[in-house]
Length: 105
Length: 529
Image 1 (cartoon, chains in turn green, orange):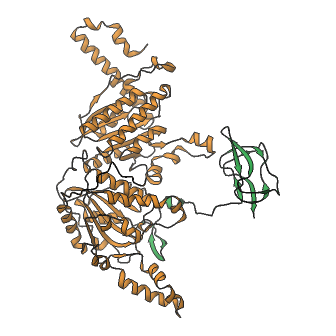
Image 2: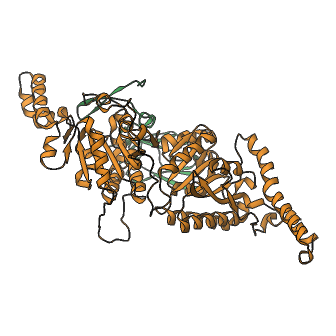
Image 3: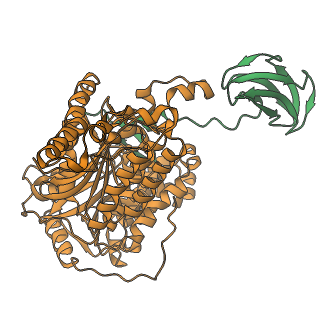
């Protein structure tokens, strides 16, 4: 066996084994992020409905992101204060680009 | 003017002499078949691919191919299609033999309108599928097509639908094999997905629902065709492919080998071969390490049990923490499922459960007995697994084993812990015979984890917690890390030594040959997929 074995802990027991490529590539869970609003699709910002310092509730309209000729309503993921706005109307944004930061209560 | 219409316009059919009619026939055949194949050869060679005709002949026994529907033509009229003659409408269909086994086969010709699927093309395929179902013989589809023939609009989609419908009707009745030998996009990938075994060849096969262009436009993600849906991706990451080959010729050899292991249809048994002993290089006692955390290759155990140490592995690169495939024991085909300690310690997870469950259902449909080799620490913990639905995917293997009525033989090689013990064809899921080696451990979990939970208080309150933990681990090991608790309850039928194992398995398969199991009537079950 030429494979390089690594340690793999399950139920307090250390097994010697190998990892699959898919297992090594898996995304490590970092928790649901409720403070940053990111573009879920690439597109153009058509409207920004809030200003820095505004108090928002979960579900309040933050901005409109147009993609594939559809106007997508982007809402607040948390109750809190708008901490930072990274985009302006007319900006082109890439997928996963940070749009707005919320400071949750 | 359409080339083929020439024959009818220039010759007066009624008054033609016999000789002229024959000349006419041979001319037509030459134009549609031979000339097309010669032209196709030039084009395909440039792409590093074989022609549809050569592929069929390479898979089938020499001179056994019989072609049908050579003269089929499309009826499309829009977008200039009325002026386009497409020889065979871009697909060759027929029947032949593989090592004497009858086979229905079709191969798409990428050099005719990009192998695109129009209604006539689809109807040729559905016709050969209907034959395969009625005659009870396996179907092989060679896919090399750019997708739907856009000019034919909804008729092209209808063609796909009619193929999917028959794939589903044929499922569990005849073995269905798909060979991906070119691009295969959109609707074209779903027929292969509905079949039992998908073969791919490195650098030639490509499969995806939406190509890199669309993904870039819609999502802004840039990826090459190879990284998105190349042969390696489907063989290793997505699990869509069952067999991976470096070349078309190697792929065809794999198909021939597979066909030798499986029956023609669900009323037949797989062909019996001359029984052979395993090769002496494989000795179970020398393969399994005594320490339950040390890895080994479970495929060596399979080779120690199978005739001539021959094993045809299925989905070798995908979810390698479980090994599935065909071998012969005493000359008869057996489907083998084994945990692979060498990869991820052999855990069950989303992919390995899915992989094993589908294989178990194939074997059950085609009367192939199941041999399960158990050595696993349980299901894989993790957020990614839970969010990916390890509950419903993990349930597939429970369902498939419970549902299977073919002879089910289980061998606990080393450890069988927790949910993994139940899932790997335990007595409780209807195994006919469960055997264990004397060194096996059948318990809720490994001694370390169990001691930490059961003796939590004693360990934390001890003056020397580590020493106390060691004592408790040993105590637990002595009491539970063996097969006798399970054997005392009758969950293990026999504890056998490594040297007795093969004989015990052969005997069980022998006496289970005519196994019959009556289940409550149902239209069909609802497996967790």
